[in-house]
Length: 396
Ligand code: FEO
Image 1 (tube, rainbow, N blue to C red):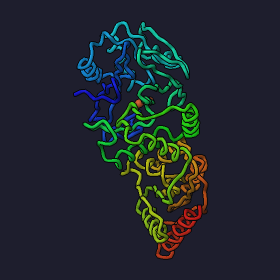
Image 2 (tube, protein in one colour):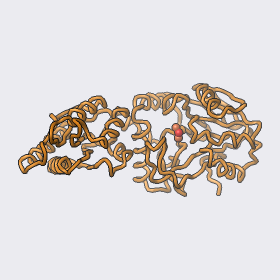
Image 3 (cartoon, rainbow, N blue to C red):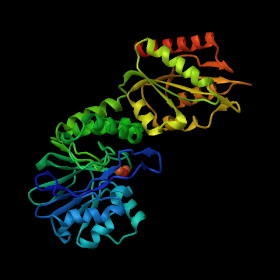
Image 4 (tube, rainbow, N blue to C red):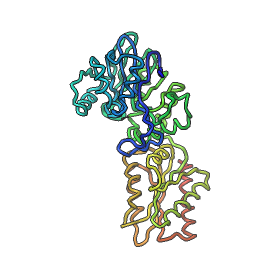
């Protein structure tokens, strides 16, 4: 079945129903994903992006349903990462005259990945390729999310093809936002932003402002993963600005691990305290929780409380990946605090505070620690700790 995204622009990508992780197991994809590619028919024919290599056959079938691939004049490579460039060699097998249009960094990367004797046309922001009735305009987008990234814009259709930006990892039989559950769509878009674009937030703001200043009319945003935004494309743009500016809800995420249950009892008493102030909380024990999901939850929560039992004068090793992850993501505008139990001697809360500071989380309460098992009085202190943190959230 042909999927027309705009006049003479067809979705010719592939659906990966079974992928459950991305980027070397750093990003869980519970709903699978798609590798979106687009075929543009005009006097000249262009394909924008391709798929991961094993899906090249699926993409070629979709192209052949519409046109003989020999007619392809251009392959626009918005991004060299292999989930979008993996099928280029296969497309070129059947489209021998095609020229690859990309940034100079993308050209360099493609040659170092595939070692092909390929024809290239390198482009910069503002450059265009005329297809006949319509032109493709290019906008470099370095570090959104790789140095080579660029967006393609088709003025005649008010269609933006921004590759990874505004994407989501969702495999569905539907292709458009007006066909799917909006809450699922926004949830996956938030997870995508949190896990991929969050540390690049300042660049996200600058790029969106640059596009706004260019005065481009945008009717449809067709990313390289997941669902195409055609009902209200500016909704995802507004969400990106909100996330990039660090705007968050008065919510708390509690993340912890426990050796023999004392830190867990602390975590649950703290949760009671926060909740008693009317502030919603999510609680995650690390070894049984998905890191990508926690990061997504944290994107829109103002506060983070991190707890660990002490072992060998330090945190439990299961807590370290979360702290390392947020250190790299550099979340803006978060407040936090540390807690945890110890037996022979302390150490965990100092490590947690140090890592939170490195992640630019503002520490707003002294860390709370308990020796061995918390008694009723100490559990009361935990509840009070939660109450105090909730007040900081409400006052922030
Ligand atoms: Fe940066 Fe979807 O690859």
